[in-house]
Length: 88
Image 1: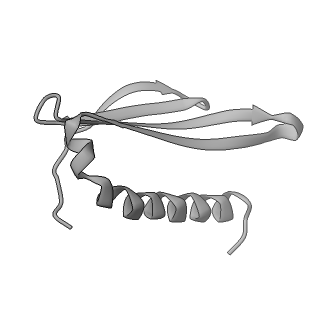
Image 2: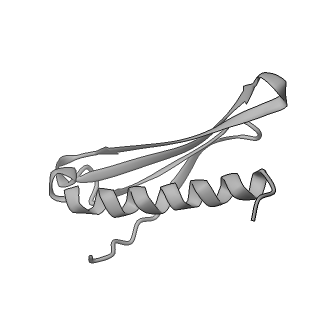
């Protein structure tokens, strides 16, 4: 898979709540926005959510990239869960 260089910009940072960032390629051909959201839950727990949104005509040609990217994010989320819960 060929790599792409993006220069993402941070759109919002609300400590303890959210971080939203994104980037684009060749103006409107591709845009990807990413968010990490922290949601308070009963019992002092926190729900971690991650959201991605991809837009633009180039997305139609990038179908094969999304599955490997999703797997990497899933692995990262599982590692974060283990670390937060104090599990090896």
